[in-house]
Structure formats: structure tokens, C-alpha cells
Image (cartoon, rainbow, N blue to C red; front, side):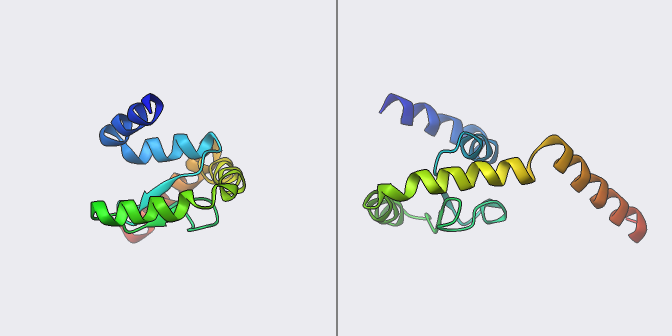
Length: 108
């Protein structure tokens, strides 16, 4: 439980970075559909993406997910693969370069 509490504290401070760090460690994640999480998580492929706006929705999502723990290792491995392919320094630099060139071409 202490480990979960430490993670929950981190989530409150910087949720998106926490999400990426957790995925990089090949740990299955459950994330809310808001805040850009859908840009990283493909539901039931590299994590769990659910509407978690209410405590009841969170309870229901956790109950369903915890009933199939055998899915955790493959999802965790897919999560790490996502980070390795999309969020390395070279990949991020390339993405930012494309963005800046696109903005410059539009005169933004």
C-alpha cells in the first residue's frame, strides 16, 4: 500500500510525466480519458483508458481490471514498447522539429 500511496502523490504533482515513467518501467497503467492520456494509451493494448470522472467509475474500472491480472504483463510490455518508440530523445527531437517547421511554414 505504501508504494501505491507514493505513486498517488506523484500523480497529483505531475500526472503525465508519471504516466510516461510508469509505462517506461513496463507497468500496466489505468488512466482517465482526459488530459492527453489517449494520445499515449491505446485501451487494452498498452494500458487501460477509462472515464474516471467519479469515484464510482474508478471503483468499477479497478474491479474489472483487477479481475484479469494475467493481462498486466503483456500490457506492461506494450507500454514500454510505446515509450521506447515514441518518447526517446531522438523521437521527441524529430517530433519537435516537424512541429516547428510546420509552424514556420504557416507563419505562426
